[in-house]
Length: 104
Image (tube, rainbow, N blue to C red; front, side):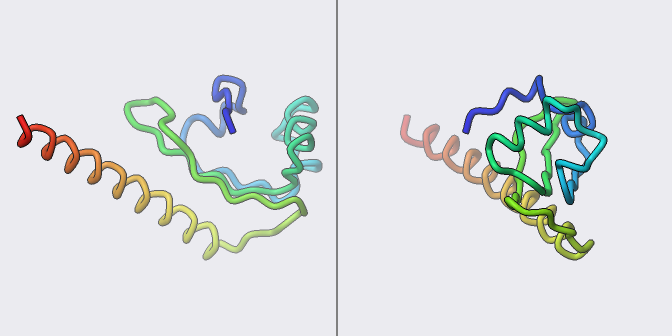
């Protein structure tokens, strides 16, 4: 899915984890944003954006088509998975770069 991050709620793009237990009832979102989530059948989510140098790089999101109250343990697990995934991707990119240099 291609997401235009410029149209995302500012609170989400700045970096803190965003937990929405019921998008339809969440007043942080505009009517058009709630409609957009509804169009893709997202009713609740946890999104862990990764911000580097004040720029959104990517995000790990766990979504549900039903309202869902996430526990702090679940949110912490999703945040940890996001950080570990990013760390692994960075390591892989560095290793690939090193292998490419050695081939020359």
